[in-house]
Image (spheres, rainbow, N blue to C red):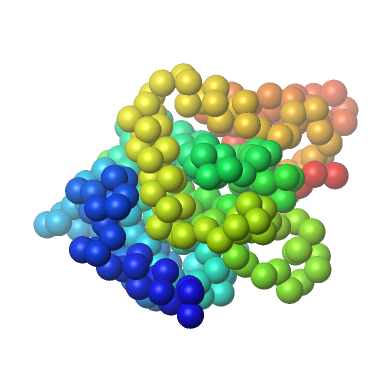
Length: 264
Ligand code: BTN
């Protein structure tokens, strides 16, 4: 089966590693099945005896308890997606940039592979042609008030067959968009290349500007659900902290630090 062969190659360190410069010399863990790659990432960040180098990655073919934002679950059938966690240690001041980094790197990598119309729905959902193709889940790992690092979880739909029609109109997958087969090794290498690029520039205002330029929310009527309380308005701007500025119906400007945004 094509997917098995591809996965075998993914897990075959010695056989194919050197074909992808982005893999060479990198600390990488491949797993057939895990609970969540972010679980393993957080455990690794906490491992004081064998701490992960910046840019280390954990990849899995299947997650049994993959998670999304706001405690949602995130499931992809075996072989259908690229699921991984990238570890980084940003200065605490730039913590909010981790999510920007993830979304931006995926947009640029997908473009490098030939995809078009890559945008970001605030704060870090990647959309292709207005449909979600990738979710990004940055989870900070603290020890008391010391930031150990961030487990930046990324799930990209490669060949997901969406059975639910409601989902099919909102979600996208890479292979149908490119009209060709995509090797997940190639995709992972492309995303890692962009993650490394921007991780080295985390403090550079260019990262914020590039993320902002990708946002597809400005001037649009939206609702933002903040764990129960919902605001409605027009997305007007974003701050360097990543906060969204929402013009409410009564004319007030509201600053939203985190929330689940939907287009009205
Ligand atoms: C979202 O809700 O949009 C974020 C989804 C993030 C999913 C990825 S898959 C790899 C990593 N491990 C997880 O458990 N979640 C992230």
